Length: 398
Image (cartoon, rainbow, N blue to C red):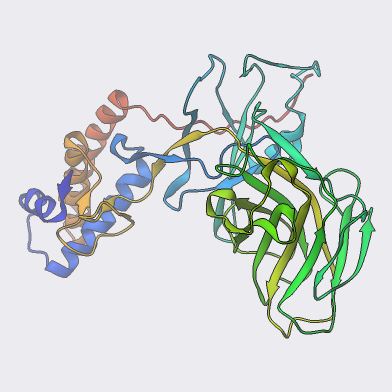
């Protein structure tokens, strides 16, 4: 890597005129921005741990904030990758249409898991709505998972906190055949939800690194601090977990939200008996003024561990601080550029092109652009992009 101060020294002789320090700083960032937008630089490839772990039928995952466009290279299992464990990048529209059909092949025949190797098609999409990117993934896995309660009927579920009118709703749900609906009363307390003391589940496998998932329908997301889940052997002996965001790491929205509760962050009340789980409470922490609202719902409470995967991608952040924090633009000369030797030459020619254009030296700028294009061609021939190509099915003959 090169410090910004070093890049300034390297680039200065390439320019025929004088450029102020302030303009030079602007040109440094402009050069990096154009370079990254035009080329998938090898030095900008990054690895992050997929969050959360990969789950079957859990489709939305946290997207790295520095992901460049849709430049996903690979999603790699941390252990035991199969020969056919590859991916297809598609649009979020096609992903949404066929994500549940991946247990059949192109002509509709069933595809089975064998020795943890999926011989069908694994899908990835990158969605970017309302300035929030998400990674969408569809892949059958064999990880352990249990359903605590599908929440399709009221059964033994009763009110918790400022709750009233706990009923089943067979018209608005995400999974199975219904959801449990409740309203917020006019009492004016700080919690509202449902609880059950007559369940049967075993937390032994999940209490350390596991996750709990539940769908919640939020009628109005205003004045909600968090959602809390309690799981244990009684109302006096339980593990408690909370979340301030939905599963993909974004704020609560009106409508259905998938919530994930991580056992790694749990607190413990009493002495829960892990093998004899009977108690669950799912509720929101709210403002006292949040009263007399209707139409909240819970659906499909499950436990799982998931498979551990790494996400490889190209970053759009061309700089990093001395502390190793990736940043979009550099502000000080001690920052480092995420480029190597070959890429430094590309940077030098691109900087010279932009600097001469800034000085209104059109002929010299064009000359530097041609030098850059020659080097760019050499670089992309020897360092081809590793990103997955976007593949959209326009017509399925099958």
